[in-house]
Image (tube, rainbow, N blue to C red; front, side, top):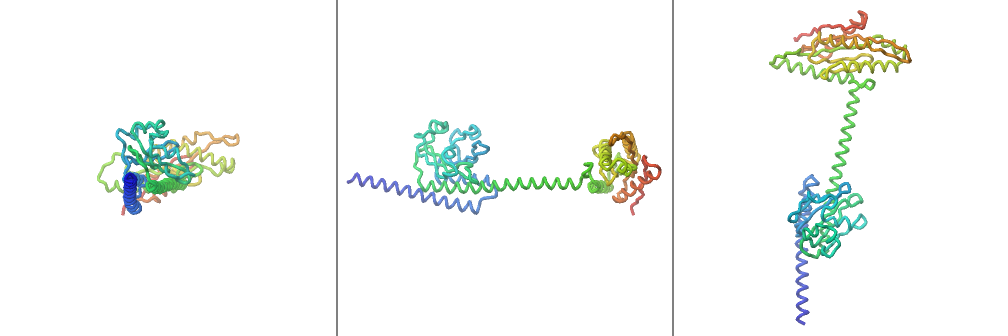
Length: 386
């Protein structure tokens, strides 16, 4: 009778201890859930660390960790603390310790994996970590995302213990917290990809808005933006007390293909387009990296030559004029020559406007047209500060 009474008392004490342990665990869990819903920050990865650390404290386990499947390779994402001598980075990829949960469970079997005696399981022989670190007990729960298992949340102990149903419930709840952070991380990644794609589309749209579709050169809007920048820089240099060894302004060169309508009428618009493409290539290849060339409209092109005075711009324009005149063209088996006329204006007065620059270069261009085409004409920019 006394033996039965003793056994009863031992069983009652054990049950009382387990109840007390479960109650303490629930208190810790409530505290964690309060922190989780009200105090965690916007970084899902940091939050996962908090979840794992708190789980280890709630269950009083030696190690708590979260393993994540990435591209078919299992990696340890978060770990509460590591067994003596354990280095996460030294663990072989694809065989990170404690992947028992992934092996035991799938999307259709979302239950806790309870291994109270690891030494009596296949893992004692299959997993070197079990032997190396003297692991005795394991409790894990799969983490599911969008219908598939993506990782495992688990605790491991170096002492034998019996994980209770309440402890299994707790790790399941913490697994749900991990899933929420995984969902948040997935959403953030998708938003980042969507934003990157949108930025790329906007960049391409902006590029298209500033590019001539036929020649691939910048268009009128793009070169006007460049002129705005140059005039602003000219104004800054005007107010800066510094002496420049080079020409302080820039030159504008207008180029117009001579008799272009005749080319279209004789050989067709497709041939005319090819002529414009070849000339745009000649213009681009004839300029320095710092200079700009754009299609102004129709058969007209404009060149912005930085730090170049009128005589220097005239030399460059003459070189290009000759290159165009010396280039053979052919359409439909018939060969022909093309010439172009150039108007040059030097812009160094900070009081000038874009219209002033363009007007003088355009005027010089039409002087060249009136004088017989296929030549370079330079006119001064007569604008003074009031």
